[in-house]
Image (cartoon, rainbow, N blue to C red; front, side, top):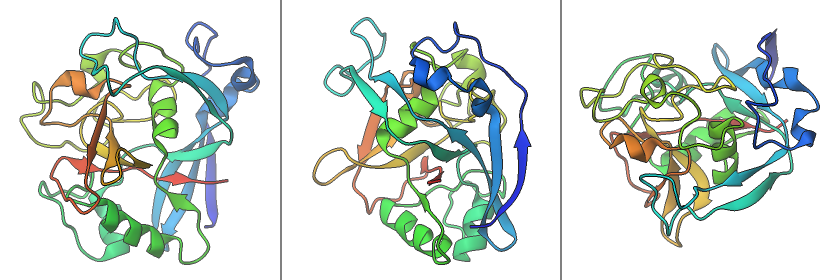
Length: 245
């Protein structure tokens, strides 16, 4: 896909903020704000943020309130290759431009697309990659690494400023970029819609991450893990894109 423009953000991040990131990850602090705009198809673009390789602790400690012990065991994970990750969940406007229809329950151009199955997303990816593009779903490790953005707690910031959940959403999804982003600039990784990942949860289910507007706030923690069968379409599930370099 053709690169159309580049914006370099000037925000700098201190060592105290990036407590879980290895020195390898700290070698170029400005990379955290490297935003590029890519074409999905002609006339429809997506903002993506570059995530460099690094190492982090995935999962939650036993002391974390609200954790599910059997699903969130801690382990050190190394991200071997950098990747572009979409700044926001894919919107209905973007989906319709590619697929020609909008399956969403809560309709609005600037709302994240919902009611898309894992299989539906594979069809979307075939279309946007038809010209040689490299878009895909994130792995679960890539998703949590970006969600944490160098933090080690349950949330990558103030949970009430960052999350849409059953206590504040009026039981509906909300337009992108209404809540505060995490320290690396990603929006709605805590709440709004659950997001499909490429990993299998079991032999018949795929991972979903990020919490959602009709769920409890504790399910929007960085380490929380959900799952579903790949043919299921749900009004509280969407996705965000990864692009390989």
